[in-house]
Image (cartoon, rainbow, N blue to C red; front, side, top):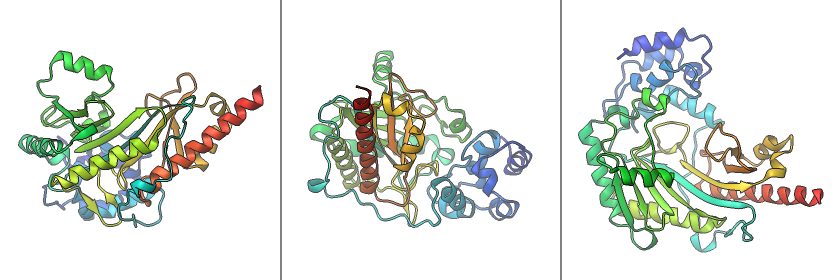
Length: 355
């Protein structure tokens, strides 16, 4: 394993590297941070390893643990401001909104345009470090703590937990077919030690209806995902919020920092740590030369349905909120809702003009 000094020299000599790590980890900051350590045992080395080994990284830096955001704030704060395009770090306190008065329901009652709707959040236990500093025993203990919280799920959230370790071939095949299974094949995450002790402590919980699932120790400690066919954003959002509140009520405490919101392994996801999205048929809008600019003006990110950097299939796009930091959870969902409604109205206009 390379030392922090060797990694730093590698980063300095990477001529074509355009990562936020390279931009913001100056010599002065490096010297000020290289000998620091968090209460979890995290160091600068764990934070920068992936970005130094992969000069084609976009961000290039991870937090070694929740306290890393404070100990290594000299570089992480600058990366966060740059990535999230904010001038100051003053993320508001969490606000999920008033469930009885959300102001939205089904965004496409006809069912002609929106194929499916999904809202997910990342959460981290505040009493555990992130993957690079976790021992196998800590991974397994965290998994046990999480499973105990799953026991509190009832009604439509009730379901079953499937650990990756010892998973049968049949369950593996079924979960792959459902697109529920996650893998250990991302080189950036691997070099960040995101797959340390794999598959120990990892698994998937999902409810009986398969409309709610939790990834345990994939990249973040927890990824909670609520989803269903069609455009009923209110139902999807309420289900997710109920699950979060149930887990908090079970005694779990999630890592937060004032001004940054909820903390995640990668600084690109923190804040609300929320991504609300629809898969939507917009063949006419997508064919417009200003499609990307139209979406950008709405703070919406369009991408192919198989994730970032993929192409659309049959005019169906994944549309999601772009902003995670500097607004509440409810505001993030409202921003996505307004963007989707604007895209839907424009698609209808363009379709009518062709007739």
